[in-house]
Each structure stands twice: as C-alpha cells, then as structure tokens.
Length: 602
Ligand SMILES: [Zn+2]
Image (cartoon, rainbow, N blue to C red; front, side, top):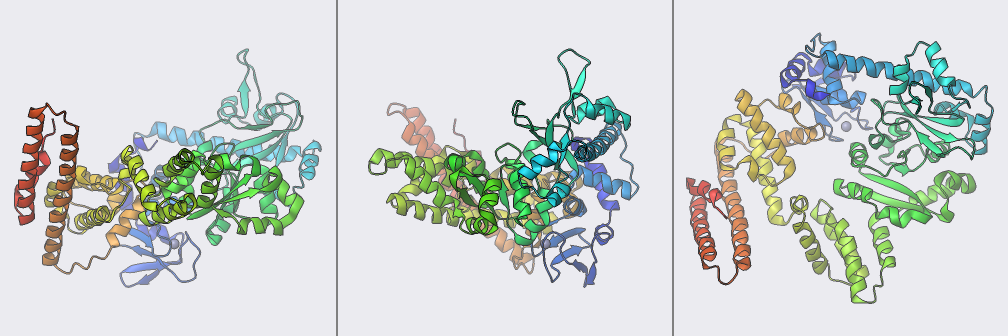
C-alpha cells in the first residue's frame, strides 16, 4: 500500500507536520536551549532523556535509542505502520492525498472489517450467557472470571449460521463477513456458513488491542481440528501477530523481559498468575517478523518448551532469527511434558517463578542437546557435533559474543577455540551474508570508517561528490551502511543537498534510528582541516583494504590455474603488478587510486 504514496507527497506532509506540534499532542515538552525534552514514552524512566530538535525536525531518546522523524514518532506512539502515519498526519494537517481513491477504499474496507471483528467479539462474549458449556469449559481449565473478562473469551454456538444471521441483522454485509474470515463458502456455491461452530473462542488482538482474528477450540472431541484460527485477512497476518501482546506490552517495557509460549491458555494462565510478560505465537514457529517486533522492546527473551520436543525446538531455525538479531535467549523446559498452563495449575506460582529464574542460557542448552545426539568419544561423532553447532555460532553478529560462545563450546568438546573458529570461517565463506557480519579487527576498522564517511556526508553535503567518487556505494561492505549510503546518494542526486528529516522518510523504519544516532556521533571534528586530514587517512586505509582483498583474489586464481595455462597465469600476474602500482600511488595520495577498481578478472 505504501507504493501509492509518492516521495513528494510524503515530503509535503512531513514539512507540514511540525514535529514539535505533533509530539506535544502526546507528551509534555519542556524547552531546554534550542531543543525540547520530555519523559520518553517508549521506555520507563524518571528523568527525561527524550529530546526533540525543532531545527532538524527529528527526535531521539538517549535512554532507549528510539529515534527518527515525525512519522517514526507517530508510528511508535500509536503502533501504526509508516503509510498509516503519513496518512494520519496528512489528514491532521489538511493535505489531501490525491490519486488515492483505491487507497481510501482500502482504508474504508479495513475500518469496516475492524468494526465487524469488534462486533463479532462482543457477539461471542454474549453467547456465553446462552450456552453454559462455554463457561464450564473455562472453569474446567481453571481460567478465572476476571481473565475471561479481560481476554474477552466467548463461545461460538453450535449450528451453521448463528453468527451470519446475527451479523446481517446488525447491518453487516455478507461480503465483509467473508473477507473477515468469519464465514466460509460451501462447495455447492453461493451457500455460506459460520467458520466457528460449537467452539470456545479466543479473540486475537493486534498490538493496540484491536480484534483482528479469532482462535477457537472445539468443544466436542468429534470436531476437527481441535484448534482453528481465522484465516489470513486484510487485518490478520499470523507471522506478525503475538497473542496477548497488547496485555503484556506495558509489563514488557517495565520489566525489559518477555516470555514466549505456544498456546492461548498458556498465556491466559500466565497472566492469571501474575506473569504479565507472557505472549504466544499462533500455532506457528517464531518468524523473522516476530523477532523484529520483539527487538524493538527487549534484548532478551525466555522461551518455554514442554519437555518432549524441547531439544528439537531449540535446534529450530526460528531461534536463529534471535541469534542473528543479537537477542539473548533463555530456555525453560517444563517437566513431565506439561505445558505452562498445566504446570501452573499443578505446581503454582512459586514453582513457575523458580523455573523462570533458572532458565538456561540458549548456548548451554544447545551445546548439551547436540552433545547428547552424538558420540563424542570418537572423532567423527565430535566432527558432526561441531558442524551442527558451528552453523548457529556463525550467525552471531558480534565478534566478542561469538568468541565467548566458542570458548564454551571448546571446553565442552575439548577442542581449541581456534580450530572451531576456522570451521566457522569456512562456513561463512559459503555464505556472503555472513562474511559481511564477521568482524575481524581490520573489518571493524573499515566499518567505523564507513560510518565516518556517512557522518561526513550528513554534516557536509558539499563533500558528497568527492566521497562517493572515491568510495562508491558498492564499496560499502556493511550492508546496513551500504543501504543508507545509497539512499543518501539518491537523495542528493534529486535535491543536490541532504536533509536528514526528509531522508528518514525514505529509509526502512527499522534503520531510521541508526541514522539519527550516526548523525549525533561525536568525532571531535573541529574544523575543515581536521575533517580533511581524517578523510585522507581513511581513503588511504580503505584503498589498502581493497587492494589486499584483490590481491587475495589473485592469489586464489593463481592457485586454481592448471599448470599448462600459461596465458591465464600471465594475465593474473599482470593484474597483480598493476594492483601493486595502484596501491603505492594510493598511499601517496595520488588520484590513481581509482584505476585499481577497474582491474579485470576475465
Ligand atoms: Zn526512551
């Protein structure tokens, strides 16, 4: 849907929507010098670390790191998407989004579906008074009346069209009912019937608590499946939704922790016993989208598994998403194959609390699990075990954490961490995505340099041409910086300058805070001379890196050449000589640097 909003319109809205005006509708702003301050709405704090810069039209929290332009503020505070934020501010500041009829149609439709889902939730709730088997079921599962209220549990009565008839009487169209996934078309066309029949119903909310779907459990053992969810609709996407998030959100922010479970009743029971940070996936494994949502709120999570499948789930790909994002994972395995709901009922709050406190670090758990699958007394068993765990370790984004895990694995498998390290390096070679993330000290330096180049173009747009000529977008090794560099360059091509707040609208919302942080980085540059000196140093260093990389490639080619291919060898050696000359020139600061990037390897 965002494709329908042009950059021009987005920029028009951004310029009209003064960030101070918008923020002050939500927070008590206090003027401090040229900036404004407030208590941050995105994390719990007592002294204000949330700052808004009216000149730059950006905000940044020095406590939790949230940052961006006016759109990002509204997205965060109202839990809405980027296009929704643009539209909300457009209507608030009287800008009409022309050529946008399909879009407003879409919004109307979405709104009417929301009304319908809200109505359906109330309908299912009311039905509890007419169908006592619903409350009986909840009582049997020890769910308290206050939880039934809070989570708005209900019942879909037996029969084929109770909900459909009631909805039509309430003025809803059949088409909407179908789009909301509440009714299904039968095989013999034109005949519709209720999706949920004779089931207890658990409404599923979005992050704001608006009802977007239902989960339903069969009351009769003859009905299949036992659990039935709404289908994917305009409102509902399973891979982005976590059950109970809306109720857990404040506690998650306060406690900076999150417990992830697997079922509705698990979450209900956890909240009932005061574990308010519990949420659940909806019958799917954790997805990358889940991880991205979670990362905005916490840096560590606890996963609850029942004993039987724990090992297999810990090896599951979904945990890799956490590893990749640098989120700490702890694992709790419940005994006797009990799920959290049953465990709480059987053993109570304190026993559960104790399990949570004793949650095992993911790596210890993973190492133990893998070790138990292989015979470590012989070499091949060891080799398989190491291969298995190396795959996961190679995903850890930062070098220090990787090192720590390597040491632990080395201890258990009685293998020097260096040897493990090289195993991981060879895995990384087969996966370019990982290479970008493996940071030797040298690469780390380069990444710092790339950051500095971007900092420079943000503060000194007049240097852009010079910088991107010598270090092109494709030279950027860190994919994140590369993407930002590309956006800055495109912006510069369009407008011949760089405006941070405007630029922020063009980049991925998840990356926006990075850019604001980068803008605020302090490199101690006091004047133009200091800047030029630093730039020169960087270009020399970068050229050297580039040349070494190319030299390594040449070496590799030489190695691969068959003994008889004299011609190929000569060509490679020629290239190597060319490279050396270019390198010497670059270190003298000559402009010949550029020629080195045009080496051919045909
Ligand atoms: Zn904050």
